[in-house]
Length: 388
Image: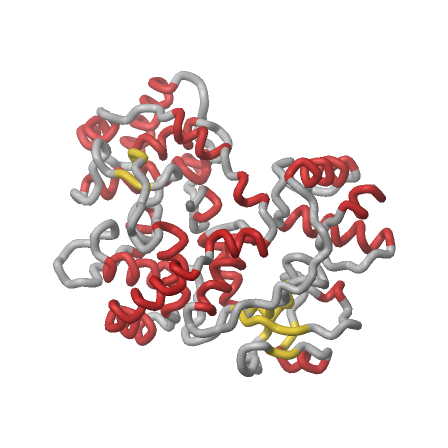
């Protein structure tokens, strides 16, 4: 499930960031070996690590087949959140109650947050991916689309290999190089891997305590604020100023309440600051997003995935099903690509023309809604497409 957009931000050394990609794959591997030795990895270690590494075309096919992210929030969340997945999550929370108690005490991360990641990433550990991890990382680093993300992960995997914690011939995981029950990249494992069960090893594939506590440690390192909420569903008044919605606008909870924002699941957390999110426009569901919500984007950069994971975390802790409302008809994948092309032609930076309603496209939609005198809710409709 997790794609390259699910990875934590990395600090890249200049030599790695400037490294080449593409061309002959064997020559590319030779370049990695040279670079490894240059940064202090023994030649014998580099040779042993790359001995079995091969290019994997299936990885590239998986990278290019992420159509699920074109689905709008309501469809996407209903696809990922089933009664069975919810009930299993509640059961897992009870089964590993002592582990989650420890996480909540030591890291301040609520169990719903990690249960949701555990569910979405590997269906509670039942499917962790069968791609050879070393091959996946080398293939994606060679592909030239995102070498600055994947190339450093190869050297992190080499460090794990030198410590006896990674086997380039047999270690498997997701197509984008993540390993274990909550899917962590090698660099994340090096920096945040934690022995949660006390056996002296960090076993993210076979030990739920190791995987869950490592995930909590990573969230904390990414800026998670202990014992604070992350998301709550709200109701907005009909005369709300829709231009105030989106992560770009932050106000105190008290300020939002003075504008008519009311909670659906218990009181809002004042005096925290928050933003108002309406993923399918003014007639769809609405949420208040607290500072911890932004940490999700260090794990995954898809707005739809992040909102779904955050919402599922609240459901696992007792929140009611969101009010879907009656949102205006959105755009299908082809129409979204057409919209992105039109917006790009007008000078907006919408990123790749991929049919996915990302942050750049949402910002451009809001700007055009303002220009055209439409409600500024960031939700593109056939009417907007026609007017462009």
